[in-house]
Amino acid sequence: MATSKYDAIIILGGGLRDGGVLPPWSEARFDLALERQTETEYFLCLSQATVHRPPPIDERGFPITEAAAGARYLVGRGISPDRVRLEALSIDTVGNAAFTRMLHADPLGWRQLLVITSQFHMPRTRAIFETVFGLAPSDYQLEFAASVDRGVTEDGVLARAAREQRSLQAWRTTAGQWTTLRDFTNWLWTQHDAYSVDGQMKTRPPLDPQTIESY
Image 1 (cartoon, rainbow, N blue to C red):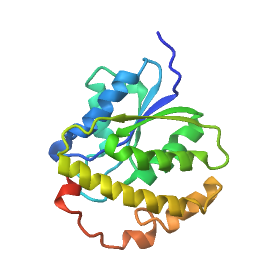
Image 2 (cartoon, helix red, strand yellow):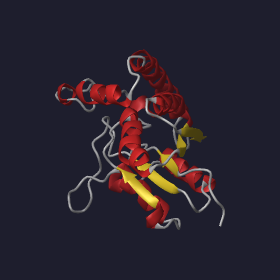
Image 3 (spheres, rainbow, N blue to C red):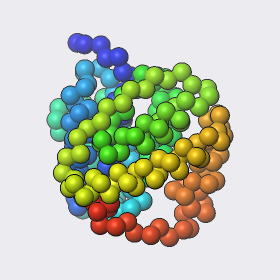
Image 4 (cartoon, helix red, strand yellow):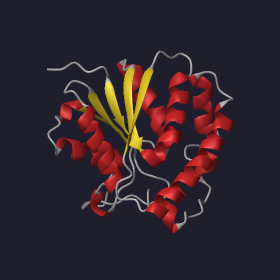
């Protein structure tokens, strides 16, 4: 059995469709993870949902998480459930990085990580993960791999890329204020719109049809 240089492969969620079906670009992320695995590392499937779409509901009326849908995809392709972990709390990319570190990497001692997401999502993902995992104390080694934007129209890719660029600029402005994980965690729970009490009380404007396509 080959020995992996990664402790875990991190796969970001990319939305779900009715019945908990992964959209094509999300499948591409998991397909890339399967290509890069060496039968020893863990897979960490990320995301509860997205703030831009209501989650699909199962036959009992419960929400289906993106993390659980991703795990089913991996197990359905021969991965042992023992090698799969879930991060089913986050509802955006900042939460993806935060809860990956706080709930899994820090307590389990994972230090060598491969982070996978779509090409249209990679620049901001990389910036966020490098910031969050670089906060003191830190001894992480991150690598990144982008999967193809399978199933997204050209207009959808352009619209999403424009939104990603705006969000990336906002992140770079905000992220300069922290030096420690404690500083960041306090900001996350008190000022981030997806996780603070004030943020939960805001109404989010809907995205345009081209942008929402890739969520």
